[in-house]
Image 1 (tube, rainbow, N blue to C red):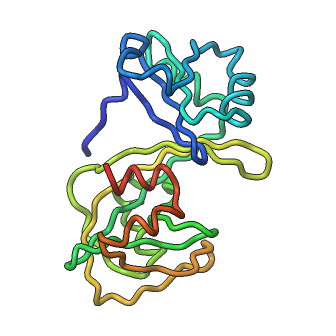
Image 2 (cartoon, rainbow, N blue to C red):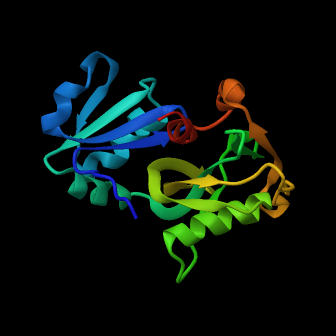
Image 3 (cartoon, helix red, strand yellow):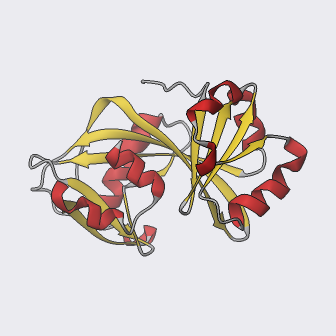
Length: 208
């Protein structure tokens, strides 16, 4: 499995905001006028998170530290952590498979089960949620992180994304027990319409 270097920067989405964890040596790469920069302190995180991420008007919040890996370990302790896997699926027409769930356009994904590899989970979740068969391509495409609120608790989800191939001949069967209402193959010229009603992390997977 391909791995990504998170030693310098980690990007985390929360609704329409972005939270960056970066090594302070890389701070000059950020235009300060567009970012709120905060020296990360574990005991101050709850207040900073509430003041700036939950309630603030600034879209880009940067936490800096000497060591991003250690910073991320500390950051994760403030949330319930979920690890998931999914796919960016393309067919023979180069269309992208998108699902509509809970009023948003999304990509198929789900939690990794016990004794299951990330790759196995990615394939299983895509096939269960959409009813199609897929071929997993070799390398990890991207890893994304996003924060969400569920039952008054904040979660940090780590999603591992793989590029997959399938065929438009397969019938699309929404997994309704997972709140999927519809599934569509989307042409590249129409993708922006769907992304307007999607998540920041999904935009990163499709556009990066």
